[in-house]
Image (spheres, rainbow, N blue to C red):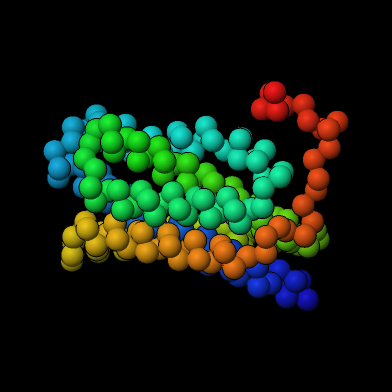
Length: 204
């Protein structure tokens, strides 16, 4: 009975959205350094450009957590997917260093928005007695993408070219955006934030 309570329509939609979104991220892990190297980017700059998205994601996450108190999760997932679509297309036209750096920053924002919102949504729609089990199933989407997407990315650049790689990233992000729009606007059991609980520095 527990598995039926977990695998609801919204859970499966969010799982699929997270899978396609994560694929669009992880296909770039082995391929972006190769792309930057081929267009003549210095090794030190490659390291900065690769790490920038992670730094921007970490900076934004606390603010996303606060925004989720009042904003539907699917709205932030939608925004995160939009960021990824924009960045995937921008890769085709922008060259290092500074324009590319800004794209990496925006991609970090997109990852923070989508991943934080999707995980929160799953936690909110899961039965309390099965929340841990539900989240463990959900994180399989992330694991599957991490296991398969890098090899897929290398296949694309070896058999085709970087243009197709970035277009595939955009298509995957578009799929996650579409799936996000099919979710309920607000998870049913989201707790309301009370004034007495509002004590963090982010609220000031």
